[in-house]
Length: 277
Image (tube, rainbow, N blue to C red; front, side, top):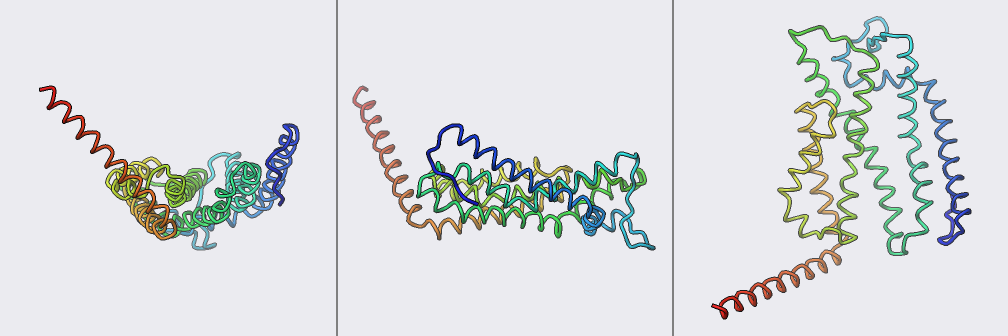
């Protein structure tokens, strides 16, 4: 997939944008059609971690899901096929978007782009897998237990699928944290030393983020996401310290100079105040 030149007339830029949007639409359309035909299998696959919460039909071995109106089946199948297509074609979609803006980046900025593009895709996929294997089962167990003695829980297809998709997307986005940390350091937005020394505030921010992203206000889910984000945060700082050692050393030297200048300014101010007295 070629990348256009950095300088192009406006109409050629618009033509390239249209071409890339057409490619995205075409790939997405084909994927939606394919996944729509396979949605019964996909839905049963999504229900595997929460089989105890949903209930399994002993005759078929499939999850027992209820559809309450004639339009629900179509809407759920389309929703599942659409999000499955987004995830499956995300490398193509992201590349088409990035390739449009890539010519505007400087050579020093481009060299980090492809590795972080691959890392971002891998982290998103890893986040969805982590959610599927670790999060869904305890989250739904806790939610269903809250109805004990209150009412009988019936697994409505649209509700369960909607919650699972929100979980998967939330964890996929949350696992992009190492990319954010890496670029904060590499572009000198926040020096490594400040990130390292401000861990208490970062942890509070991650806890708040976990509470916002998790769709069910479930303390079990929020706690698991918070623990995962702390591990990712510490691992990303460790990785940045190894890969960007020279840059971090320069940032520390600059911070030391700024602190020395501030102390000198404070000392001169105090001397001036004493002289006035």
